[in-house]
Length: 272
Image 1 (cartoon, rainbow, N blue to C red):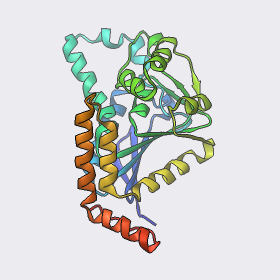
Image 2 (cartoon, helix red, strand yellow; image 1 turned 90 degrees about the vertical axis):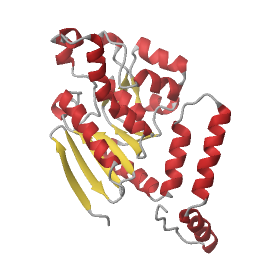
Image 3 (cartoon, one colour; image 1 turned 180 degrees about the vertical axis):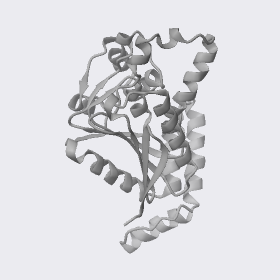
Image 4 (cartoon, rainbow, N blue to C red; image 1 turned 30 degrees about the vertical axis):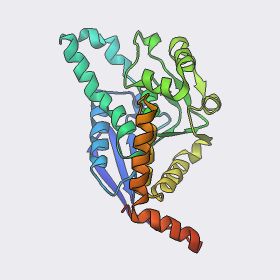
């Protein structure tokens, strides 16, 4: 069994590493894991550190307590929010963009990312869940864009991500009508990969993570890159796909996969 290692990053998140799998937990349960500056900075720092940890290949992102995250802390907006900031507009935009690198890293880094969602998943919380490669939901999960009724238009990449995941019509419906989605409906529209009982959520997410961690690492990374790139140019996408496939096929892992199949045994991948 892989050794489990707890890593201290900041009070607002916890990180546990077990072999090739890391679990990052948003840790403000008393505030339903709403986004404070500290939580965002701690989460981003943790993800950046994990990206620089070669042995970690899969990340499970979840929330402490009964909820994944309700997104932005409305207390700060009630106190003035962006309008209470005397900084120039572009300065405030740059500050926000620093935090939203969390979504960028979840989506575009080499880590394969899984959001394990229970309870409320709203606003920027929904955005970071959408930035993950896969989403597994508890039967208690409730999804909501939430921005419009808070007088906001969206951040952490949510409008772009949900349009890409679900299509423009469904994304507009979710953002403009701001209706709640339960786990069953989220599964039906393709927002989540599967729905499990609440008591099984983290265990099932970790099983999925271990399954992915057992795949050929370089090929898995190349598949993520193929699927993440957003170029509308099919010729360019096709060329990049071909290049990565040849690179994958030249690895020792590709030889091992074929050999293990022919020998009817489980493969042992080394990432080379």
